[in-house]
Image (cartoon, rainbow, N blue to C red):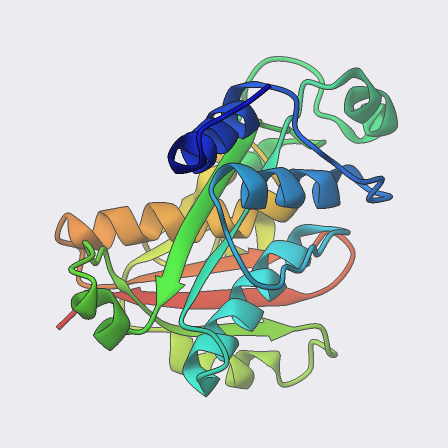
Amino acid sequence: LAIPAEGREAWLHQKLADGLRPTLFLAQLPNLLAGSISIVHNVAGSSRTLMGEEGAGAEALRVAAARIAAGSAEMVLVGGGVIAERWDVMLAFGAALHHGPWCPTAERDGLVMGSQAGFMVLESEDHARARQARILAVLSDVRVDAGPEEGRAGRFAALAPASGGLSVAPMRAMAVPGAEMLADAIGSGFEASFPVGVALAALRVEAGAPHIVVHGFGHGYGEFSALVEPCP
């Protein structure tokens, strides 16, 4: 197949988007997803895949923000996704799932999963303005804590404005005034929960919210928060 030199790049992008894609055996499906995103959207540079439980999504966001703040990256695509209706997922979590009709998070005896995905482009404000990008909000801080619960409240104190909050995980956040349980609306997304919560918070801040604290807990261990504020 002879393709003129000036049309090769456009032809290649078309084939990668809607045809067979060259892939390697990457050991885990999340790695395969990350590789596919890089190919289809022409994302260059290194990539990292974190998985395990809810804290993985929070850690991915923290690492991306830290790299931009340190100047080791100009722009990062970060996020997560999950398909909850897969039969193997239903089988693996069958005993832990909620049975019966819908009920609020605090009244559930089990887990309610939900398919979801959230991806964001993180970059410095100067870089975004230089390329005339639409700035939704500012990710002011991200904190991930896998240490003991003693003293944890103090470690998160700086991320707790007087009001407003979107909780990505239930139970312990029920006592926070004004907290909204994201799992009530879209179910639990495991690793994707925190990126989805932060993405929704950014959209709400752009719509006029003064600030939003996104807070979550891991099923096994860990606690994490992000502060999303308007762009000055």
